[in-house]
Length: 503
Image (tube, rainbow, N blue to C red; front, side, top):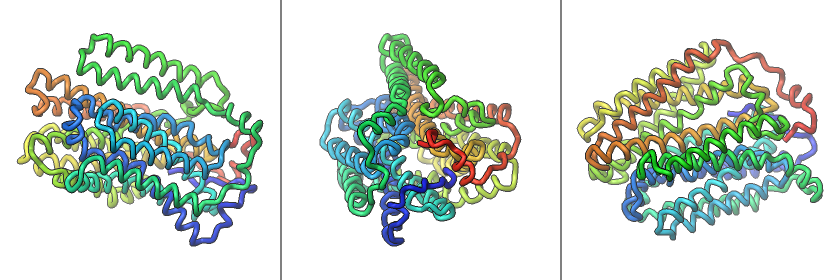
């Protein structure tokens, strides 16, 4: 969670609103964060049915999730800077409209490739929504105390979207048809669009000349965003193609090669352009503990996504469980967040963050080690339920500590950039990890009993365990056992920031 940010003094359009209008607008903006995560979790219950009706293979079904996450994550790096160029209200309306329109279109599509493309286009709307909503919230509540509470509420709604989305998606699939999940996304988007259009004012400083906008547009790192997005899409395409066409096929190797060229080019480009233009400023990698914290940020949502992806299909298509029964069996993954999060925050304040983070990793390892043995309904309570409880407790501790420490080790004036990087790495880890796990499962199943076999899923869970173990070792070896350095007052540091550096 980003620390409170001082609002520039020239714009009073948001902060001057009546309190009741502020609260209603805050609720609407928080619903946008809810929708952006709901649009991911609600599909997990529907993936088996969508895959069956549209003829989507296990390996390719990951695109229903990863397509959205890739554009959401990659474009969000540059999305925060758009509010410096264009009216944040108009940004939000554009994002809500994009999400609603392409969600509605997704409900009418009955071909897998067009559906994958529309899911990616939905992610563009989410990538515009989140930064512009945060911009408006920060300006609605300039007081640091109120601002911190508002931003915390915004983050909590994202967590609620993950939990509630799974259950609502299951009810929709059970009582209606899967296109209604996309229709619900569209309805939510239309409500958000209308609410913000009516209640949100336009900032007084948003009316810039065309020349000023052109100058500011040059500060957007469009090439960097393109290189990262294209590189990651090609990487995941190569991973999913490898399991279907062979790892030595041109359809697998060519995307891999091009993706590595693009990703290397991204970091090379970021090192060459001015620091204030880079979507990931190179100086951040030199900040103590930043690199290891950013790396760990890829794990939490990846862990949950892989678990949901691997279990949902087999529970519905092999065990014959309904979507609702499936969702109820997943509830420990979400409900434990409410009691564990305050405990993790308390541990962070009392003990060395390195050892608290290691403790979370150890719990996650123990929980993950139990999941490969959940190969039948009879083993749910003995292995899966216990693995869910222990594993998700550790993952929540990891997520909580990282979300606090990654801002604590960096400067408050970089909070917006760091927040975008943190959210980006969360989604990228999930997109790439889910694709790799699904590809491993598909490859193993080809020679070990087909998609209804447990062998492929078992191998994918051991892959998740191995990645988690490597991350645990990296935390132990590379993370410095130091408390976050003392911070100057946020107002003072932001006041000292040169005007040309403020985005």
